[in-house]
Structure formats: C-alpha cells, structure tokens
Length: 452
Image (cartoon, rainbow, N blue to C red; front, side):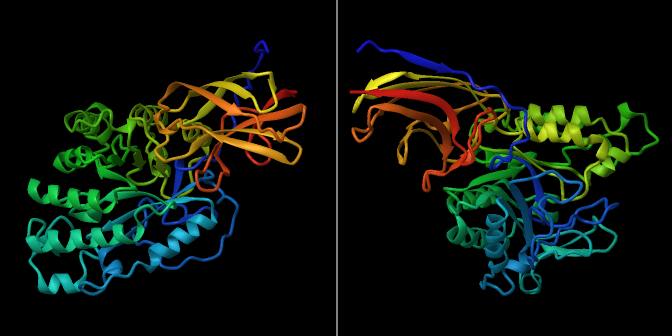
C-alpha cells in the first residue's frame, strides 16, 4: 500500500496553564489557603505545623499555582539530639498532593532576631559564637566546627533517607549556614564541600538548588544542583532612597550578574531548576516604584522555572504582567505539527512524527513521557515514546515513532491523540499550549483509517 499521510497543525493557545513544577508558588501556604495579611513587608519564616481545610479555589489576589514552598527551622525537625520529627513535612506533602501541588522544602539551621537560631540542645552542648548582626546579640553555631557539620549533615541524610524520590517532593533547598541557612556568616570551603556532598548523597532522585553566591554556589553547581535567587526583585530595597538610582546598591545590578558568571552557573538551567523569591513582597516593590518589566526580564534571562511570591496579595496593577510571567516561566510546550499515516492495514504500523516547540525559557526536569493514543470505540492502545522530554530545551523538539495498530481493531476509523503522561499512572499531566485537548487531557489530532 502506498503510504498516505495526514497533517494536523493545532492552534497555539495563550491560556494560563496550570502545569506541574513551574510558575508561581505559594509560600508556607498551599493552593486555596488565605494569604498573609495585606500590608506585610516580610514573609513569615515559621513553617506550617497545622494544616487547616482549604478555603478558596484560588486565594483572591494571587495566581493559581501547582507548587508550594515551605521551610522549617532545625529545632522543629530535631527537637532532641538525634531524635527527628518530620511529621510536619509528611503532612505538608499530603496537603500539597490534595491541592494539586508539589513541594519545595528547606530545612534552616538558624533564623534571625527573635527567631530560633539553633536547637536549644545544640546551643547548650556544642561550640557557639555570638552574632551582632541584629539589635540583640544572638548565639549561633560555629559554622566551621566539626560538631556543626556532623549534626547538620546527619539531619540532611535522615531527611533524604525518608523523602528522596517522593513524587510530591519537587525540590530541596541546600541550606548551609547563617540566617535562614542562606549563608550570612561563612564556613570554610571544606565544610561547604562536606555539606554539599551530604545533600547530593541524600538526594540522588530529588532536584536540589544552591543559594546564589560564593563558594557554596560553586560547590552546589559542581554537584549537579540548580540555584535559587532570593531578592530577585531588588532594585534598592535596602538602599538609601535619597541617593540617585545609579548610586543605590542593589542585587540585580551589583550582585547577581557577577555571581552567576563567576560561579559558573550560566548553563545549569539546562539540567537543574532556577527558582526565585522576592526580597520582601511584590507589593513593597510596587510601592517603591520598581520597574517590573526589568525584573521579569532578568528572571526570564536566567531561565527561571518557579517564582515564590510569598503568599502576599500581588499588586493589581501588575497582575496581567505577572500572569504572563508565570506562563513564560519554565517550559511551555506547543505542538506545532503532527504527521501520521492516514491509512494502514490491520496489524500494520502508523508512522508518526511531531514537531514540538518549547516557547518557555527552560526544560522540564522531571520524568514524564510523550504518548500517542489510538482509539476505536472502547478499545485503545497507548504508545509510550522513549523520548526523554527533559531534553526539550527552549526551541524545537522532533519526535519520530512507529506505532503498531492492534489486530483487534476493525476496519474503519481510529482516533489519534497525544499527551504527556505520568509514567506510573499513564494519566496526562503536562498540558500542551495547544487547542484541542479533551476533558482527560489528550490532544485530539484526527483519525487514521484501518483497512483490511
């Protein structure tokens, strides 16, 4: 039989797509929780210990999300030396699953003023130093001490033993030393290497991100981690407002471009995520008159995937731009064209090719599969491609498949559809930015005729 092919070119969709592992994130909250009170400038660092029922479909003043971000202090997860309590993490994972989210987690060795600096048992027994960064002197671990590195890496290992590979655990922040684990206060390169190695060994299956800047970022990048960027909106949050803009020190001009280059992090987005968090809140940045277009441009330039907007109400004047920003973050797959055999003999082969364009700024970092479904009445067969969609970088991807048409199909029409599915369940999970999806998430591509 002479081969005859059919082509279909679905129309690209501009809709806001709730795809997994990307876009905006809730902070110490989950989808549908009320936001922090309006007017707040700083986020709440105490991770959730209680998990009330959902209140909203989407909290008013926020964007729909598929990612939650939570962090807890060391004293909560190890209340006694060597006794671990991860019950709040287990509940957070369960809540995220119920709300259609995955979870980013950071365990923090210490906090800031009026926050826990380390477990009481640690401060009473092991080497401490006094921090004068805040108004009140605060005791904290000696970051280079063998005792700190040993205790912190043991905690990392125990967390990984319990949670690495959990499909709801999206990513782990690699906290090291200082306030909130973000590195205020230094440790030696050797200590940073030991801590980095502990994270890598504890999480061979779960993505990791290192804090931007310094040797700790370099070590993290070398270990295969991505990176996170706090204060990604900083155009002068802590600068003297009396100074002209050109003289105000800020992260976006004076820190992050240098750190990304000098730490060798320009291309890590190809295999590990880049995530963002504002320094205070976006409402505060709006109040200060920051240029949101510039902020978004910088974050997309770094190939960001997740933006944690701290679960404060977003500025209404910026909402349209933030919604478009969320769409552009991470991956966004458009099925530009599919071409397949229009007629095949029963038991023959459907030759299928597809052109997919990733119009986002990063790939997906999680193992989903491209699949083609042939359906006739109640009978269907799903062909799962061996293509690794994690290689679909921004730009073009090309899929070539040979799909066996079951002999059980009768002569007549067979519907053709494709989807990106979860490997374990076969359920469509990642949506194309293309029109024509059915209610189950399969993108309809037309029909092939089975002939005897």
